[in-house]
Image (cartoon, rainbow, N blue to C red):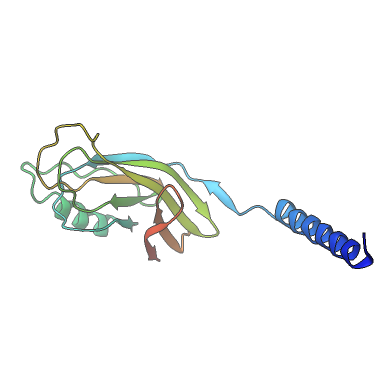
Length: 168
């Protein structure tokens, strides 16, 4: 082996070793799981969103107005859930209008990372061979999460793409 090839090989191995050392010894992200409870879920609300949406409610006034608006098409209107906003916040997640029945939202995880509340949720489609009513639906989920000092909330899919966010 010539001197140049030996130098190149040793340099390459050293750089590779350094890269792996940095990657595997790096500080883990500040991530902590957040306990959430499904407050309500369904597929018939009075919103006309066409894309995924996430919202957070931290006071009675803002949540009461929103809750009345999304259920304006129901008679009798459902009772407003009792929430202690000193302890909890409410998240609203929707994937927008769908062209048939049979859709739902599966919340996979909720966690906090560096001041951001991240919700991983996916839209579950009806099976391909299922008979689904040809009616416009709007699947949604209302979750309670602990009140916190979040500076941002994000809705992400299974592969981590941000579908919607709100800076707080």
